[in-house]
Image (cartoon, rainbow, N blue to C red):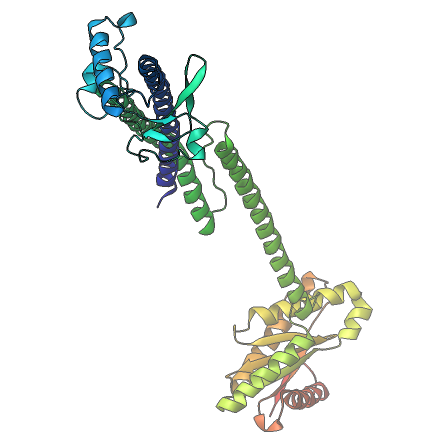
Length: 430
């Protein structure tokens, strides 16, 4: 069940309950009031009739009894019928009815109990037997009948309301008015529920759609703010929360991106040589070990190279350390620019450089190294300094039987030493 339906039902039930309670209380109160007035009038009339009857005969015992009382009341009613009722009102009957006309139509609306001076029942009204002692509960409401200053009987009202035709019409009119009130309240409640729930449902619908959009990742959402009630305050608070979340998420994303960039930079700094921008020795040792294991496992060729700039100390001494740094950077750029993506080149320390060639046989590796040697030698070093000349010697080793990448590099270093001894600016391999 939707919130809109619940809201309408709540208004409807509240309206119906309020009308039913007010109308029901009014109906019951009015009925009791009418009953009380009629009962009092009928009791007064009966009391007057009994008093007149006893006065006529001196006592109830000296009278003809119930039959005589009925005859007496019949004659009294005929006299009342001929007399015009005061202020247009029908005279009440001896049994409490509204008048002779209704009295001829059936059971009187009230029955009264008559007891003698000793509270023994003489007229039981269908409740008590003749001669039965009147109970204490009935004696409390009994009214004495006095003749010449002495109590000769007691009158006690007894019975239930039997409304007349006019009274029944009046009660029916009240009941109809109550039903009309209930119907009107139901229509009004439905109209108000439809009107109010439409506004409430529209705002809640916007909020629900916005929350779903936020759940899907779109944090910045805005819903219409209508009016100044609590729902409008909720919509305004939601807009502020959405904006704050979106801003915080954007700042967090920017911060996260910055951290990722910085982490990548730190990682690169940890594996790169600051001067030549080549990988450093630690990174080369780790990756060379992995490449060696892969070559052994898959029985693929693998070559390692170690190179050294010839007479580098002389370059520093004769042309300055700044010139030496330029030479190192340029040699690093030459090596990097002529490598395949799968190859690994690094500055191993000082003027030494190392290269790992996966999937490369010894002749191919030696030929590539000789090409690199020639490029380094023919580079226009005179643009750095007119008298500057730079060459490089290299050792190449490609036998996996050495056992480890480090052992292969030691073999390549021995071949580099041979290249130095045999005149430098050359490539030695075996």
